[in-house]
Image 1 (cartoon, rainbow, N blue to C red):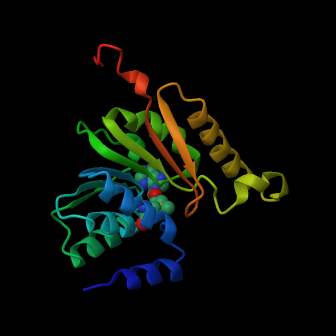
Image 2 (cartoon, rainbow, N blue to C red):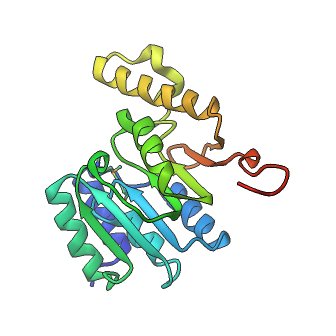
Length: 202
Ligand SMILES: C[S@@+](CC[C@H](N)C(=O)[O-])C[C@H]1O[C@@H](n2cnc3c(N)ncnc32)[C@H](O)[C@@H]1O
């Protein structure tokens, strides 16, 4: 059986971006403290964050989506190795083409940074009304605060996209977002209270 340390080392050696330690620790604590039981993850990579989240409690059920075949196959293998096949379902698809009917307590967005607004708009329909959308990489290795200094055009465009996503979250009419300088920068979004009117109806 694999260990979490081996997965972390494999990701590091093979340049596979997985959640930073502080970020995943915050997320797993949040899941525990808020009794989250259903999770949708956009961006599985090799299954590291799914495995960490599933290990919080055997009642937790996770659907996670990955569009890269090699990573999907590695994630399948890793999930099996941890004996978590009954808790984690991995879909090999582009998340933007995935349709799910189910609602989740928590949606974790950790995929192509240029598409975060699309992921948010699409999958908010799969969020329970008291649920949370967590977005990772909002600081993008500290580059978001120094975008004028970035020389590579592609990188500058990516950073611009994250900046636009942060503005989208700040100005969002439906959701309030708390921004945390934890890991690579997390956004914690929840429906605004005014979704429930004065009579307590939705
Ligand atoms: C940062 S990694 C995910 C890391 C993982 N959540 C962890 O912490 O262990 C992002 C992954 O999202 C996948 N991805 C990017 N865009 C996607 C999309 N539109 N649909 C599905 N997967 C996508 C990439 O192939 C990549 O493996």
